[in-house]
View 1: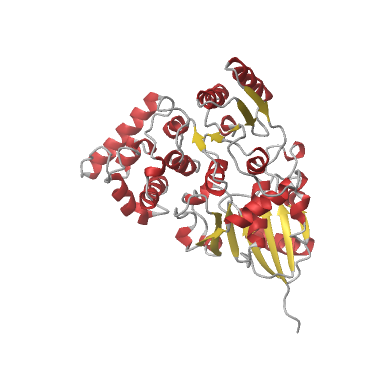
View 2: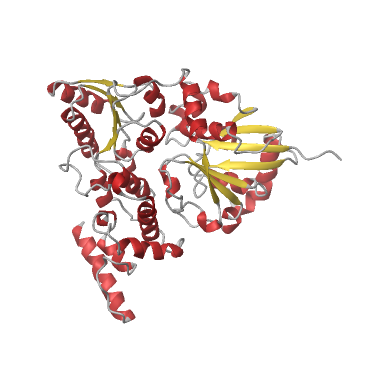
Length: 445
């Protein structure tokens, strides 16, 4: 009797994710396999008009690591990857169909998924119910708690969390409730894949390049209005020029309006600087090697931390105070990336733009872990109740006042944490007090 074939299926929706997977494969994070499949998902609102990652510039240099590249969009067409989940009654039929369609036979399948709490990863995990799962995280969200409660039949299959070591010493919270073991993808492997993607050798020393401004298109996520985000970008220009930079490069989000870029060009000219727009859909990390920027400016992009930690570039943040104040609901998964950037990246403007006092490099690893644990507990107290102790420790400690802008008074009060309003112990009175807080918040809208 012949041994069962092992097939590894790597699911990716972004080029950044594909680079992370390639680095993990190169560094031996995955065992040997008879076949490796890259399953591409295009989660854009209109996938028909947005190129998938396997059409991106430089992807051909990554393709050789996989025996085949499949499209999840084609597999479930005409349904959208972000909105389709199989009905429980259809699972046995669809499971058999998928194995036949992808020529899996009775292979032993291993899955590498991103964002397992939502589709399409959740749907793929359901259709391959016997496959052990590795979740990989290609950004700062790996440091935050799982944003939704996951079926234990899915979460219990997750053995480990692969992540980039963006903040040395900071422990990821994602999926820890299922005992997933965090494992860092070696930094050298990631940067080597980026160089391969760019088709160039190692980057030279930085310092003589322009200031690189990173756009995120936060208006599309309803985190800012279009006008507010345009003003955020203008603050990047003004702040960089105020620091003495006369050459600026703006990397817009691929779906951001072109009018924003033109406004930035005019603003730079009026300030006596020159701004060029990088229209190529390349990773920011590719530009770090090409431009050797003297400064990287952004809001809370993961690329700020890759610049700082992986490439040793000076970085600065803009606008984190505004977003921390208005981000809703409190458990919004963007909160931890905001928290981390606000805590470890210095502000671009010298105390004039960001309301919160910067923590910067003064924060210790232990203090940063406690801050992230405190925010994580406030976000998901039911999923991670054991984080209450570090939350109380942080909110009672020396950094509490400097990081109070990461929390709302209402959230601290509801969870009975230090810094909240004292509530009477009688259950009926506590209920009325919480109702009053909700009414007060509604009146402010």
